[in-house]
Length: 254
Image 1: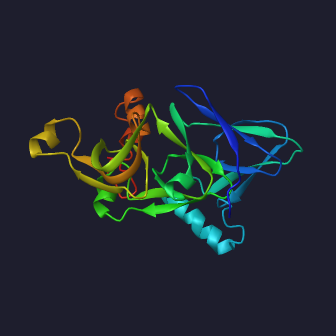
Image 2: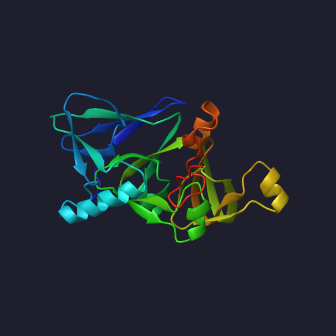
Image 3: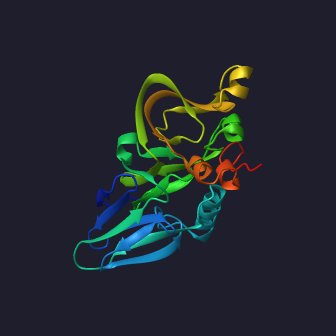
């Protein structure tokens, strides 16, 4: 299914929102609870699945819901459609302070790998599915977990980065990143988890035992303040601050 063509503008600086302009009968899909406001003519409906395959049967939608449950996201998605006769707008806010990033999926060969909490909204026609990391070590020890999300389509998608957004264009290069700080990356990039260094560095360096390693040629988006670090700063020692530090699903709790 070809994605709907939507216009948008990003509003704000440290705590951003995206306002999307829809022509009549255009639709944008979003995570449950992401909507901030909508103008006259916009109607919304909660549905099973992302609507990228309108011919998908009930079992297909059920499987899609199950895969979203594995990523920790809502089982349903909200579809916002302009049912009026002129242009209208709907706005979506990020779940915590940070940056909203517009991505044209066409530029990346029609797909992008995103951390499980990174997706915010997208034009109808975008497929959101589970991406299983092939390297088990990345699942056992990586902040992004064994399960990531794959965005597929030919239109616009919007992802959220906590804190400051950092973009890197790798050219057959390697970058090592604090686990949990990877937002998204080109499918051509190899994602793995490696030890942070020698035993002394791992135990006393303060950078943790493992680092995320990204290798290859393509684009990488990083965030300076993942949700776990934000919670740790506000509520030291809370269970939520320990999430995303080492389980197969990225949800380890001591």
